[in-house]
Image 1 (cartoon, rainbow over the protein chains, first blue to last red):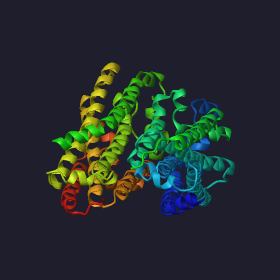
Image 2 (cartoon, chains in turn green, purple; image 1 turned 90 degrees about the vertical axis):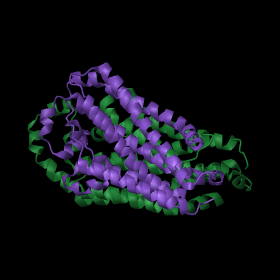
Image 3 (tube, rainbow over the protein chains, first blue to last red; image 1 turned 120 degrees about the vertical axis):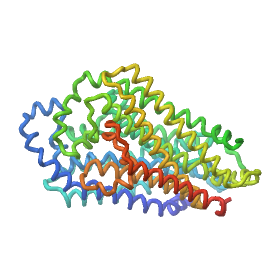
Image 4 (cartoon, each protein chain N blue to C red; image 1 turned 60 degrees about the horizontal axis):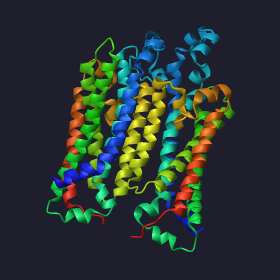
Length: 266
Length: 265
């Protein structure tokens, strides 16, 4: 348990700041900005209500998404995903790759514990950090929406949205762990993390231009797309399968590589 | 000169990956134009004109007139600008700090060149990389646009957008370069650079949704040169000066602080 406790303690300060950052953005975006949005958007609401529902549906416009606080939250979620993904990948890269990167691998391996123990405890420590952040995020999001909303809220949709953030955290943590173990030398945690997360994020944004269905499978931020979530009140099954495959696959690969890897003592 | 070549060599792999990314974004993006314009989904431009700002943000259009080719390219440009900023932050916070991070600072410092010179050469290398990024984007855009051959040529607008891209990248580069030169801990400086990047992007998003945040514009380089203005061949002179002054002072301060600060070895 030494590694677990050590990593938990090491990451405490950064997790605190991630909670503050994610919490602040959640409050500002999901809560404080909503009244302004509401006033702006309500001016045109009658215009939309005049259009028959069949027409709207064929255009792919969902009134619930446009005119409710939860709809606004689901839009804001996109940017919260970005932050969550960043936290996940930085923790995965940072914690799993720490000894490899800082050339201290021999120190941790001379301890009376197997490599698999080291990996598992490190992964557990990251998981705890991510879970704490997620719980605090959910609380703040819940309070912000409940506080600023002007209509009753479908808490099941809220729960789904909140879970999607957790899923993104875990996915990117697994990706980070994979990159940290597979790359022969990883030097800049922030450089790699920033590039990977933003590249995938931009890919997600550009989906509105590409509109290729197959591309959605390669773009993790698309896996929890809000349109589907709103209409069906559930996640898309193929996308969940992708999520499971990539997350579990990356973690297992990272584990196997970590356990078998040749380590150069310096 | 040796140092310059070495830096270029150490970044060529990253540069190649990034160029592939640009090819994907710009090439595939512009290639989609014919499908985009013929599908008619964007002919609702007139309707959208009457909508509040928040609406555009939700549709991901950010108030750009997407019914022309210029507007369509502007959308792609906005995405490239974000990636450009990420690239600039990565280079700026890495190129100087990596010596201390990888424990190679001593090897560099015993070479017969002054710290000021090291700093200047590294800055040159970083600027070259930024220029390559802009150059790849520019040439690729020209090539793909020629393939699509839209009805309305956008040569002037394109040139101006590339200038804006360069300016935004230089802004982020010099800020993160300064952080790396000024702060002793490489880790802290790259964390701060990340915070600057993420924070300014999120403020930019918020400005797209809510109207009354104009006062924050000065803090957000993404909003300095707006696509809407660039498409009208306008480059806001005030923000041009802001970019130049901030970049110059960040670099100036780096040159002042780095030669006399302690190295963490």
